[in-house]
Image (cartoon, rainbow, N blue to C red):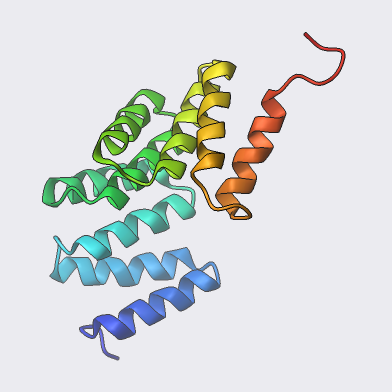
Length: 161
């Protein structure tokens, strides 16, 4: 009823996402973007929804566009995540390295670099980045728990070399 009211649109999108209705959320965001194609928050939200819905490959060009408009660290982080989900590990590493240079939050950056290292079967490097993630992430958070689990899985058990 109020397609031009950003607050209402955001609430409706939030409700759709809470119930896992990604298609409805994307339709609403797409409608808004047809009127404001360079709206960075909406583009970033569209990309995040695409990633969550399992369509990370489609999120990359959206985030490429966002990064032509602004150097928003969240957009670069989302693009790195989308690239990992799309198995483009070299490009993901470039984004994480750029985030590292820009002073972005080190926990998620270290975690992403650990995932890249794991893909390359470099367990020493992966373990180092996971330790950095644990050091730079608040204990008990989902990222902290995931980093701890991955680090534990990388360490050899008793009786193995």
